[in-house]
Image 1 (spheres, one colour):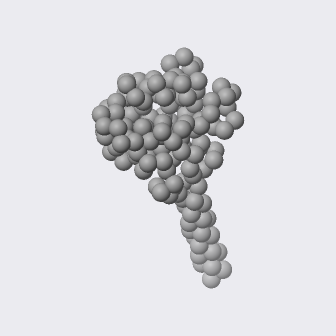
Image 2: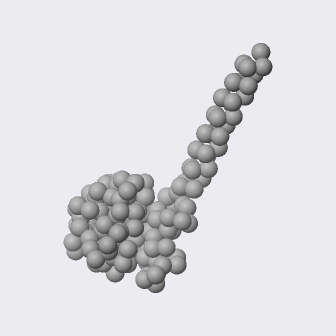
Image 3: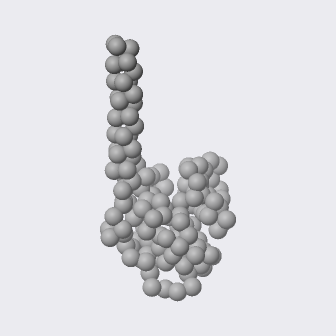
Length: 145
């Protein structure tokens, strides 16, 4: 009888821990799309023409071609590298910028530990502007080409 009670308590405790961990994880990453800067209305946005210059200025210090060990194993200096993503997989969902991790991070939404660029960074790079974020959103929504 005691053995059954202990097993039942142990299982219940494990389930409770798992539920709490999932709830905590979701609260860190829950993004309200209404808080994101809107996508740009510019049509024909491309990586080479519109996005790479933003990444060069704001992201290359940590994710560029001269970085020995890019943060999170994420490189942003080629379209192929951007689409591949980093150690956690792709950072964007082609066609859906509102659900793309990259957009949440550059908009400084969700977990503050994931903000890009980080508020305190060695390169002293400031946050992206709403216009830059809007252009990145339009690029993703238009197929990330």
